[in-house]
Amino acid sequence: MLTWLSRDDLAFPPLEKALREPNGLLAAGGDLSAQRLIAAYRHGCFPWYQGEQPLLWWSPDPRTVLFPNELHVSRSLAKCLRQQRFQVTFDQDFAAVIRECAGPRSYTDGTWITDAMRSAYQQLHEMGVAHSVEVWHDEQLVGGLYGLAMGRLFFGESMFSRADNASKVGFVTLVRQLQQWDFVLIDCQMPTTHLQSLGARPIPRSEFAAALRTHLDQRSLADWRSCASPQA
Image 1 (cartoon, rainbow, N blue to C red):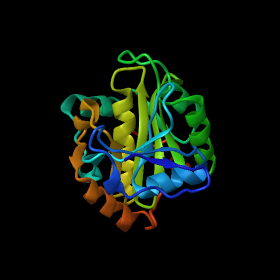
Image 2: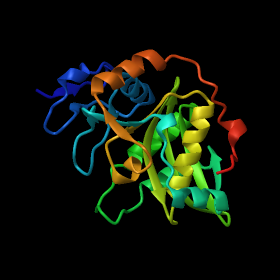
Image 3: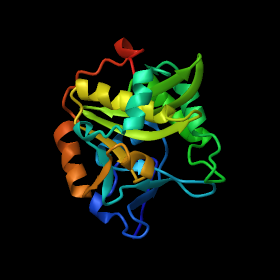
């Protein structure tokens, strides 16, 4: 039975109560307050809903993740990185990145990044929890991604690309930086061929939950502002 959340209680049901069909649906209701979003990611779930649906919270099993030391860079992507066609920055224009991520996609009519979602994650960014990666070409924003950093874990949310390989360059640059900062895992949530080509793979939800318990409260070496313009 699906758990309905109240606005007054930030507690989520145990991950084991998530439905098998649809895979990972854990709860519905609640709100998108910063406190609830942080509680959700710490618990191992994330919001995802569309259109007229209620606010839905998910914890799929298996969970798609990428371990930084398993990053795969194809020959063509490595060549693109060497050419340094793009400049990559961190936390320079979070609002623009999430706005572009919410834009229309060729494979769907709608977007799950509603105005309410954009506002909520913008607040998390202002709190220093959510971060963006921007990819520039000729001073134009052509790609990027955003997500949350907690402890030694990064929770990826969405990415966009307006030029060939732009989002991949941004992602590879992020992963390499996170590895230097001693991050141990990047949550990719759901499988896509795009992420799998970069080394993402599924792990059991129980293993993901164990990583949360171990690494969420560990200090990392992250200094997002000092790394505003890393080389791709």
